[in-house]
Length: 164
View 1 (cartoon, rainbow, N blue to C red):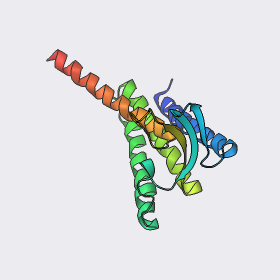
View 2: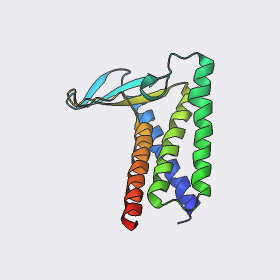
View 3: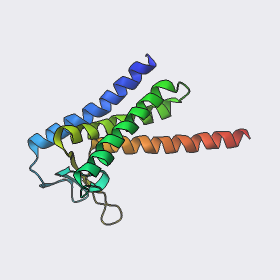
């Protein structure tokens, strides 16, 4: 498959699964209702987030929110896409990781442009051992991409160490 087609399809896939999930949530859940999927450990709770990750920045004035939650992320996402298209030496793991980050980022920026906020709905609480904020599939895409880059960096460092 053509590399640029692969990049495009992977980014579109990440955007699509996020946006489809958000449409389903907005059309089927009741706002702020807690639905137990796996007891209290995994719940669906539809909220609208005017801020960034975990609501950070939601209390900023509108101009700062526009700059930090829309303009800067759009510039960064543009650069990420430029980087993955132009950097032909990227290994497949890094390429997939950057596509997940770009797709998830674009999906959340799209929400901010169209709705002025981001739809979140997943919540995990493992009895105080581990507890998340409320998040969405785009957040999972970005986090997965970051973990893949970290994992890939550790693997590449180990390979270089083994060679030396």
